[in-house]
Image (cartoon, rainbow, N blue to C red):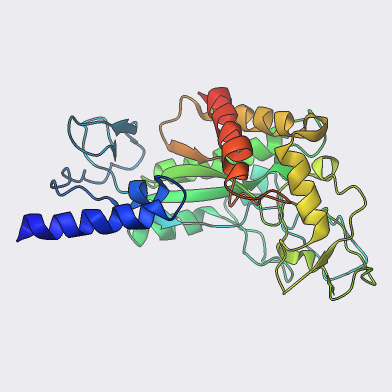
Length: 307
């Protein structure tokens, strides 16, 4: 009976996979019937075992600690280091960051919340509270616009701020996954008012984050949104497409910026990994060509740069 059920399930997976991007659903849905490895116990505060991917013979790979025990990372995504749009004044398209970048602003205190920032500042008490709730990891979202505000100029003060949070996490016995975050490519796509195209709405830049102004190439496309979606914006579509095609070498600069982070934390076992580009938006490109010709080669380039 068990074998018959497995056969039916396998056939169903193959049928679904046949009508989707080849192999994607098959890869994501097949679950081995072998028992999972034992789960490691929490690490003592301040001692973070190095993590790696274990490849047991005849079984599925898994994230493991230095004793080859399964590690399940579970945590939260605090947004206090993201470069969100920080003002209610619609005439401004390039306001300063909401919260201080200098780590000394967080020594023994926490800056006040901003009325216009959709998230509070990230302080040590937040990391301590996460650990008390049983979390063992933090996905730490960052903004390219703060990491490299001018082309070729890495903001070491921002990296010091990241290191401060990594240190808090280490003291709390938590891992950090550094997340290169973006939403609708950048908050520097501009705002067309009144909107020149029919059926468009004035762009609300409050939740746009990601690329710095110098890497936001909109080619004069209007910045207006459709269907209430921040990504359905001609300026966002054009800017994202220019990134994927490495216009003016901006993708090269991005990869170099991510590599600067990796160099800083290459000897720190607290940093468990990197999210290379949050929720990649294809711009004017369509699947599966976007994934095969642009996204996957980009991932390969970033991985080569940081390893």
